[in-house]
Image 1 (cartoon, rainbow, N blue to C red):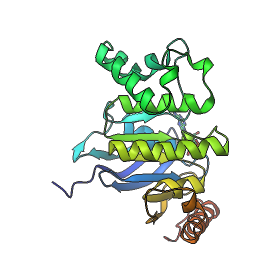
Image 2 (cartoon, protein in one colour; image 1 turned 90 degrees about the horizontal axis):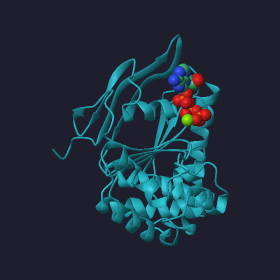
Image 3 (tube, rainbow, N blue to C red; image 1 turned 60 degrees about the vertical axis):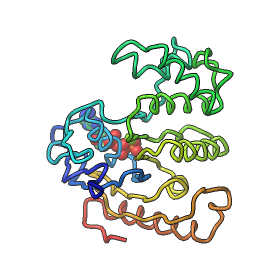
Image 4 (tube, rainbow, N blue to C red; image 1 turned 180 degrees about the vertical axis):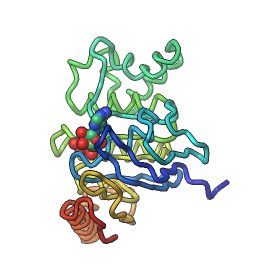
Length: 261
Ligand SMILES: Nc1ncnc2c1ncn2[C@@H]1O[C@H](COP(=O)(O)OP(=O)(O)OP(=O)(O)O)[C@@H](O)[C@H]1O
Ligand SMILES: [Mg+2]
């Protein structure tokens, strides 16, 4: 069924006690699409990810993956949490195979694949190092490789580069785009950084302030591969301005109806 969306978030709401964390939200994602989600702090971005991952059951609505209802079920997506959660007493290889180790025993094949991944993406000399001996960018890469090694064709990445300096961040963004191009995964990527969202994504989705919901969606038709020239092009600046104004409109009109861009 070529028309089946990879992911369908349908009329999802999420309430914690009397707090509405996520107002009614729907989103349809095509196979292989790279979606960036931006929105003010506390608007429910991580909550939405948790709902998609099945870690949080929504109060209303449902989540469909390849047409199958997976609401409240885990194990369908690769998920990199907002903080890099490397296990300090496991090496780089040990961390990459953690998904396998938690569900069954990590096999020799899993470890070989972890070493291959680490080598392919610039950490070949560090496979036996422990996290404390890695830089921030390296740790983020290991966390991302672990997400890849879970072998799900949809990846949820919650502010993976938030803690990095701008130069490392740019390198990591290019690295992620390479990984994405190599692996044909569908990506949902949360960020506070509008430049990052426009640089990476096929579509930037803007959420309004708490209780969050999707208030605007911008198609990004910038050519790929994206490079340093991308971020200095007039088309990039124009898109960035559109997303920023949608973001500020959503912030100002919190809880009210926001004009769709
Ligand atoms: N398990 C929980 N129990 C109670 N309230 C929660 C829970 N998880 C999230 N919330 C509340 O839901 C709202 C949305 O939180 P969420 O973490 O999804 O925001 P966010 O958009 O990811 O913010 P940030 O950009 O700061 O990461 C917040 O008000 C938060 O306090
Ligand atoms: Mg969050």
